[in-house]
Length: 256
Image (cartoon, rainbow, N blue to C red):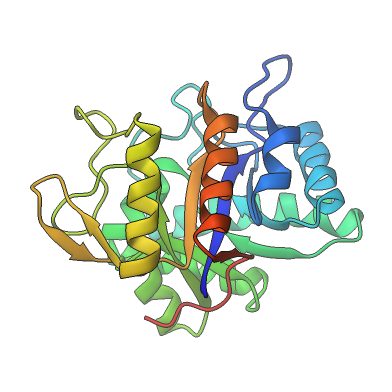
């Protein structure tokens, strides 16, 4: 039997602005990454999303990003290693407080957007993020792009990690994600997304944009909760995985 964690970025509403269908998607996934107020979310939304996750017995993760509400954390920002450490530590601490207050336990940390992608290719930034996670709680799991500096940095300091792959993102030949500002970066064909997931889970490979097949470790698969078809896709993907004899459960330790 194959095993995969399904994770989703949620808790992204802010004030009077509502984003995503958290109540309906959380029961379908095995782990949730909750925005911590910098790129999305606010204290009330954080509390409510933690409660939803605990009600559904879904593993809870912090989803720290750049302080960029206007750009949804997807714009690159030049920060020092110390600044990166501070902003990640601050956001983990905020969500950790809500989780503890609710009687739960934080399971993982997954950086968001530009911070995630920059840490994947920048050794110093990756280490700053990993050290912030470790210093909050060395038993946490860092979710990072498969084959990236994020995972290598975590392993170098003894931090547990999970190799993440994406259902709806196009890959480049070096294993990185095609930047969102380029055509075809986000896959919109549901059937193609599901085929990509099954290929990664069952064969450990993904087809890059140039047609080549590259090796990829899949400990956890990300689905996005903010698109118009997010709920329908989450439902279909879970159903397909179950039909293909793939067990869905929260991520454990990366073996790269």
